[in-house]
Amino acid sequence: MMVNEHTNFLCKHARRRGITCRILKENSSFCVLEKGNRQHLVYGGIVFDSASASASSISRNKTATNQFLKMYNFPVLPHIKIQDLKEASTFLKKHKKVVVKPLMMKQGLGITVGIETMSELRKAWNEVEQVSKLSKVVEKYYPGIDHRVLVINYKHIFVVQRFPARVVGDGEKSILQLIKQNNKTKTPGKRKKDIEIDEVLTSYLKKQGLNLSSVPAKDSLIDLRGTANIHTGGTSRDFTDEISKEVKAEVIKIAKLLKLPVLGVDYLAKDINKKRYIIELNADPGIQLHHFPTHGKSRDVVTKILDMLF
Image (cartoon, rainbow, N blue to C red; front, side):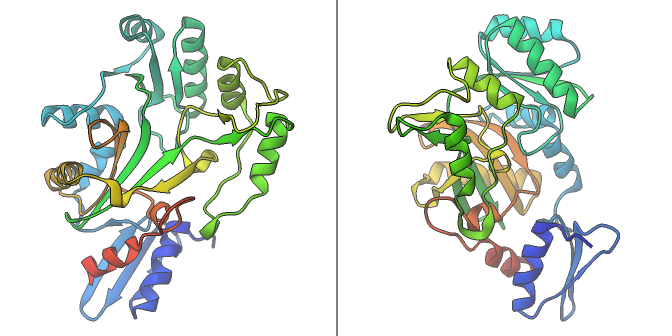
């Protein structure tokens, strides 16, 4: 049986503390943790039986998330759910630069960033159709850094900044050669994913006037995608010690409103402590991101979770 990596990570640490972990054969995303007279059913290594089912459902729907946050005056970007290109075109004309996303997918699948023309919009629409036939989401583009803020037990806060797949020029190698070189490097915890060369990547290069044969100048930073996602070759940096009390209070308030003892809040911000926008909520956030950042200090998130349960 191929065990879900998040379930496996949680169980490994639980067993070290004398907690029995039994993984369901039918679906390895589920496990049961037991110690003494306490028992917890866990999904995906992070969703516990104490979490609100309705809030978990809201977090999976980007439009419901946006509306819920807006209802309580949390900072969000202009955003609509659409069924056809005509609606998307009207939104693009109003906001000039947009992002297209599937309504309910994760890990950056089907997302196109920085759309400015109708031809780009049609292409993005076709790409999102490949991963989801459900309604689409169009959101105003904002050029910020992606931040994942994780709150545990309504008090413990951990933060990472996430960056898109990128290469640094040396004045000699092509972008293709730099990608191959990057894919050979290793990071702690084996969390690094290879940069995949696909239509999204080549299109993003084209918008910058580049292609895979281009040779970037020495020390120039070339972003290969518009989305900052580890699963598509992105990198991360621990930011926990730099987050403000205001942001901490904000994510704790959201978690309490949703009754989610573990919650990931995704922000876009140039400086998160001054101005920020929430773009997604995650009821099942991957905690290994905080244990194994590409840069910066490792954070022992799993211990806080097990302390909360047992």
